[in-house]
Length: 472
Image (cartoon, rainbow, N blue to C red; front, side, top):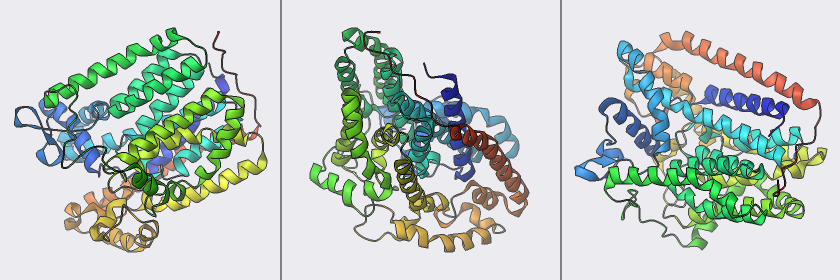
């Protein structure tokens, strides 16, 4: 069990990440993936059905249309969608409030991911300052930054995998299985990680009984997934990915891998510069704890192969290599123990995380799909330089839209991404005072959380509690 001080830091760190992401969140669900998953929640609340509008679904049972994505995020969205109904009916803006409420879920789960990364770093022996830097940096100092407040399942999958590893190291196999089951419900293909968990437990000498203890939650996830498939498409293994729109894993590995490594729109080295330190960190971890190093590397490798061979290896029109997010998050945790108490390594990692933050900040300020309005032929996704150069024009347009009623139904890609801009665009100039109060409240809460955290981390590192032996 983590020390009380570590748990307090983890939750304070997570709360800080949540507040920062809420501060810069668009407050909207903009991707077609997110719209489809939110559509399921809205259909459940309003009609008691799983069906969604045809334009965001795939045809299934009884000629109705259904989301092709995992069920978890849709189910998690049901309570916030339901809770805003009374206020929505009074204001006449049910659709707007449903979207805002659901959109707040991802920052919350991203904050939980920050806490989990910190605790796993400590479990691996990282000092508190190094573990906190990696936990915050992985989410804010790489291309994961815009996904911390966007309505995709990648942060949820990453959370499940990180908690799975931490709980397996702690000797809590049932909890490790539950964490993996959580990730599977968000994205069913994550089930391919189960054999890696089993192999890790055997490599640590935990025995077959440890594997058995992981199975109940995994079995529940399998049953829920099969039931969801039957309800939508009438087949237990039919997920809605059908040719020609979704032909499956059809990209040659060399082509997809080359894009993920070297494409100017998707290169993992460009969108997560700190990744260049990971080989050194894994080598150091391998010398100390081979099974754990092998598990982290294998989890990333599986995610990499799945992404590289998927027909849309670029993850659609998205910022950086979106499909690699869970693998990147789990891989970066190895940096904490490598940094250790080395001031030089801490500074180097800090610089690379800061560079990653600067590179992806434009994707937070402006919608990444704005470049689809005039997409150059042959591009695999948004371009870094163009994202930055579009911001001045979007800023002028956003301020000019405050008094324009026609802007309310205009394409969101023509405006800055912050929820503050969206509120003023939807409600007009009278919304400025409420926007100012909300922004200041979030800033005050962020400072209230972050300042004590900084003082706690400056007190110096303390040794982490060692993981129990397999015999224990």
